[in-house]
Amino acid sequence: MITRRALLALLASSTLPASLLAASDKYKVIETTLADDLLKPLKDRLPDSPRVLNMKSLGREPGTQGGTVRMLIGRQKDIRYVPIYSYSRLVGYNEQLEMVPDILESYTVEEGRIFTFKLRAGHKWSDGSELSAEDFRYYWEEVILNPEILRAGPPARLKVNGNVAKFEVLDNLTVRYTWDLPMPRFLSMLASPIPQTLALPSAYMRQFHVKFQSADVLEKSMEQQRVDTWVRLHRKMMRQNRPENPNLPTLEAWRPRTFSPAEQFMFERNPYFHRVDENGVQLPYVDRLQLNVSSAGLIGAKTATGESDLQATALGLPDYTLIKEAESRFPIKVSLWRSSRGSSVALFPNLTCKDEVWRALFQDVRVRRALSLAINRREINQVICYGLARESANTVLPESPLYKPEYSTKWSDFDPEQANALLDEVGIAERGPNGIRYLPDGRQANITIESAGESTLETDVLELITDHFRQIGVALFIRNSQRDIFRSRVVGGEVLMSAWQGLDNGLPSADMPPTELAPTTNDQLQWPVWGLYYLSGHSQGRPADMGKVEELGQLLDQWLLTTNSEQREKIWHQMLDIHADQVFSIGTVNGTLQPVVKSEQLQNVPEEGLYGFEPMSYLGVYMPDTFWIKEAG
Image 1 (cartoon, rainbow, N blue to C red):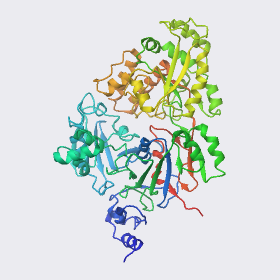
Image 2 (image 1 turned 120 degrees about the vertical axis):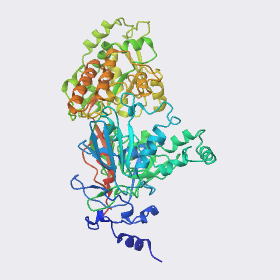
Image 3 (image 1 turned 90 degrees about the vertical axis):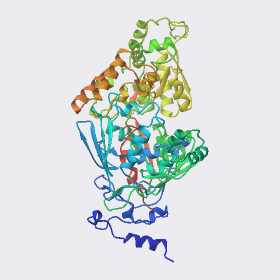
Image 4 (image 1 turned 90 degrees about the horizontal axis):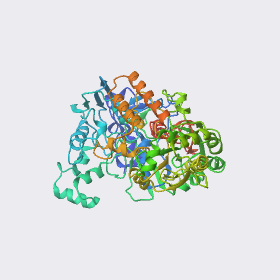
């Protein structure tokens, strides 16, 4: 009987295709105990022209395949971090935040509105089915343009001046999207942490589509998945950014192997992943990711005892001392990266809240400026961040090419005297015996600030701000609730003020869309109802009725029709200047240090980096598929 090792050796000696011969048999089969797909010759699993990553040019070392990396998550939904970390995109950012083709072999842009995408020949989904133009056609014609699946029509983000692109299949590996007007945000949408979907594994998805499947089979699938329509079935089974369906083929580095609910989730290397190192070793190096669900409050302590091999989520600067001390007892190493958020903790007065009195006050710029001037950012920095952060409004970071010092400093100095004067000027000068101001309707100026309560840093900052606000006659009360409930209350107008992190993207360039600076989504805590109006294509919510906010929307519309970087940069600065002056959100400090913990055996994890959701995709831009495990000894 031939052994597995002998079989793998035999497969490794198979003849390579002509496109790989120049690499002189670099593309090797590495023995593994994973799926049977890995028994197939590597030449049958890689694209004809894989994406080659040179480890040395990245400042890293070529590695070897194998092993399991353990991570801790605070809830089952956090398995969503895996496709963000994996960061396999049609086009994506490199570490210098330059746009490069990834899944695509190449792309061209003409007139800012014609996008032609060329796929890699021989590229396959994780189940071995071919990635082709048909997968793009299926998504565009059978999903995006299907009125049963999208009753309101194609999403607004895919429209320019109300129209979607003309889609064309040029050949089996080439597709084209053409808009009548420029679409400058298209590529950045594809490179984002949660990218715009353009392709689905059509061979798999057809079984859940009424056009391609019989009614009785669909009925059985609906019953199995506990949904009542084929549309809901199709939506559930197609979710690429929520890896809850292990049967859904993927293009990411690791594919899920565990169905929910579970306390431990396993992700296994994609045997058809399209990247290799300079020695021809297929990435990812690590065979498995093991995500263990834990109480979010215990993740710092568990990380300190070596229960995670790679951890950044659910950690904050307050955890650093404990973990640093644990380095001498456990085989772990902690580094400090810089947060890429516009503010590590920010306050968001809800300009669309239901309370008419507070809504009128929050829409008065003097009130927002007063609340900002009342905050002692230096105290926050020294007491909580050990003086290592930057005191700033919620704005872009110095590392961004769009940064100007005045964006950071305007209305962010500690000046309680001026803050009190502004509130007196508004007409709420009278105070009660406890020093708290009276509102126009006779109530005291009590603000309940709400959040998901997931950050120790946030809790510590709010405790200090409570004292700061009392000095200007405003009482602050803190309420934490589960994230979904919190978000629902915000959109419903029940929340007066929220605490969250600041700008997702503190590192923008002029060619990245300024969508965070105008109402575009109901996730924007300062104006969720106005954002919902934009997001829903004007079918829900209501339009902004504040002049400066309307101006932001007009500037965003102008940016979305630009054709060059100079135009985009000018608009960015106009919008950033409005935000600095109008204080729609109230920043505290940015550039805070983010602990990133790894096991001593895990190699190629950068010592320094920028950590954040947009555009870094947390660890994603640093390509965790290049991390590898060095055996002890």
